[in-house]
Figure (cartoon, rainbow, N blue to C red):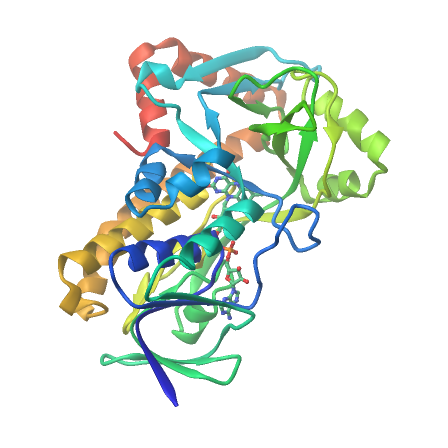
Length: 398
Ligand SMILES: Cc1cc2nc3c(=O)[nH]c(=O)nc-3n(C[C@H](O)[C@H](O)[C@H](O)COP(=O)(O)OP(=O)(O)OC[C@H]3O[C@@H](n4cnc5c(N)ncnc54)[C@H](O)[C@@H]3O)c2cc1C
């Protein structure tokens, strides 16, 4: 027997689940499938320990679709983005520049939440929406995409016919592969360690990005843990150095942490595992196929700089949702999909190029180039209109 639905979403990561909430809130019958069920705590061995900073435009979308009230109690505001250049001969801060959201808005830049908690809470929210179903433990196993329908075979043996298939199944997207869409990948020879720490000095809702070489070291505020200030860390390094750090015993690792964080928040205490993520940039050759659209990492992967990854994904989801709502009868039609690609492709290309540049600047090893980077930071920060422009560009609001 074949199930029918308006929209089938392959992939119930954060992007896929938010897409389901968006289409569900707009009244479309939506089914989302994912082989991996959400974790219930950060101690779960499969828990995604990354955190996501939702920037202002993303929070507006989450609010519109009724998700924000459920997420807000767990969110930490990001009021200031502090960029630190520690690229001198000694590993110590030589330029500290604060970008304060108050200069461009009466709101913080964004709000930060742990990924594992997001998946749990969004999945719980989907249960409150009539017509929206999340089927964990089940993935896309086969696809026949034609002009009339997307017919998917799922790993539980069922078949689903959808007017629109959304590929939100990550960087190695099964939908993208089944549609025969290629992807271009840039490898930086970098990896990121991802973990959480507590520290004696409060973060004061400041997100701190420290640049030396190998890539940024970023501390993002989280709610206090056991009465102590707490932050999520993404530490990017060359691959071999990241693997060396990952293998160190905790006390030796914490000593390295103290050095790399320049002691800005005092000694850092590791409180979670420290999984390693490969860092790549990738973009799909096309965003659509018959009755199908790619969103989020299925469409574009960027290095984790400036909290852009998932925020670009939410812009994909908003565009698709708006097109679907504007003309529900045309859901999944060639016209709707062409409009989606036209709207998203230029912005995706521009952000990929911008983040690529920032990542390469952060990786610089030769001293003269690191000096140039520090001068560039001071110049951008020192000229008020340029500073405000950079902040707005980061938020995607101007
Ligand atoms: C170290 C690091 C830090 C980051 N920090 C930030 C940040 O602060 N802010 C930000 O905006 N972005 C950040 N990002 C990017 C952000 O985490 C990603 O954009 C986001 O998690 C990707 O979401 P996704 O749903 O596209 O993919 P994923 O999270 O990979 O989800 C894809 C889902 O598809 C499922 N799947 C796989 N195969 C199938 C199949 N055959 N059928 C169905 N489902 C399938 C998987 O199980 C998975 O759950 C970071 C990335 C990294 C690497």
